[in-house]
Image (cartoon, rainbow, N blue to C red; front, top):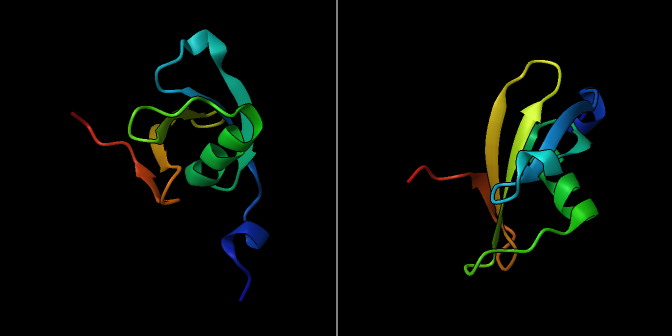
Length: 84
């Protein structure tokens, strides 16, 4: 059975660090929001917060859907940003 990466086409996302200005966005590609968040981190190496996490704001360029994704650099865990 093919993986999601093999069967789904890459989508274009606009991404920026959650604490950066929106004018600092970059185009990234991925089959999912999570995949695009990792592409952003790999390419632009944003500075993590005091907890060692990076939060990435993503917008699907085709649908306009927006999501925030966080990645813990120490544990490698990732998921949606928590609302506070």
